[in-house]
Length: 127
Image 1 (cartoon, rainbow, N blue to C red):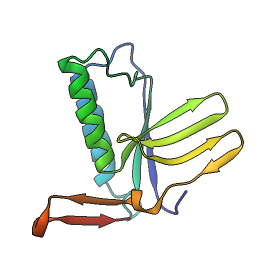
Image 2 (cartoon, rainbow, N blue to C red):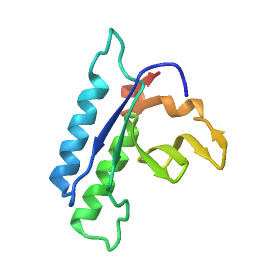
Image 3 (tube, rainbow, N blue to C red):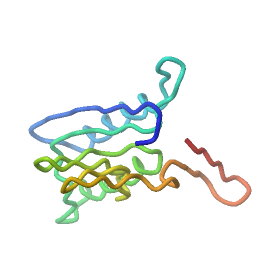
């Protein structure tokens, strides 16, 4: 993993609703913009028991998908653990760091760049 601070938020609930996802987003965003010993975290990851299946497509599943894609745009991702294997994934589907079958796949450097807006109004932040 690149040098820097990472935050991991853990949530376990019997049922997640769209307001719960929104609250998780706000909490992760708060961590993302916080300062820890004078430094901002490179990324914030959460570990939950959320089912990332967006089918059947309903208003709620569409809102979840929109929130998750928004998370990934600002380096807020999730952790998936399956047995001894684990992955740090940004919601847009990019693998940040993975340990699978005893091998490590690390992040592409461009995953730590964030861009907002378009044209002359585009803002870039690189970690």
